[in-house]
Image 1 (tube, rainbow, N blue to C red):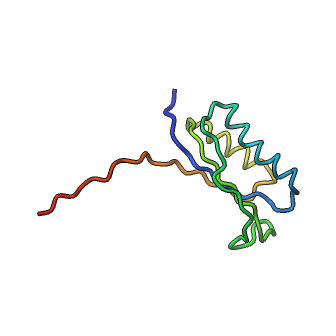
Image 2: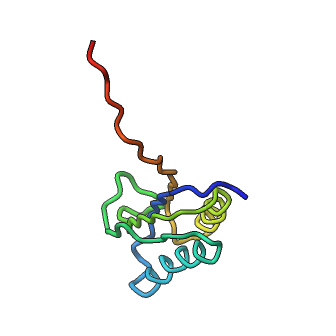
Image 3: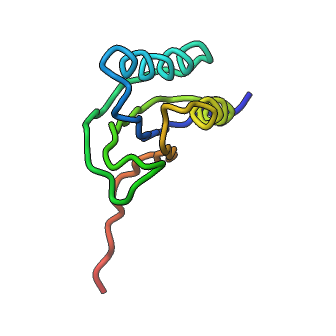
Length: 108
């Protein structure tokens, strides 16, 4: 059994999908994570924003930020699903470091 880590995945959806298709695309990835056993799945932010440079001829995208706890192989499944989807322009997953108490530095 792999170690469970906390991850954040940010992805950009096409803006020409429409409201219903956008909600379905977001729900698809949340459901995929939950079916694979991920816990604490939540959307931290969702906003429409201008892209820094055109991606596949799109100048705007819907940025979605997910946070969840999962094993590493679940992240690979999620990224594979996003890579195969035409709705996702870009994605990035980052493992969150566990927060440690600040170490005090002794003065000389």
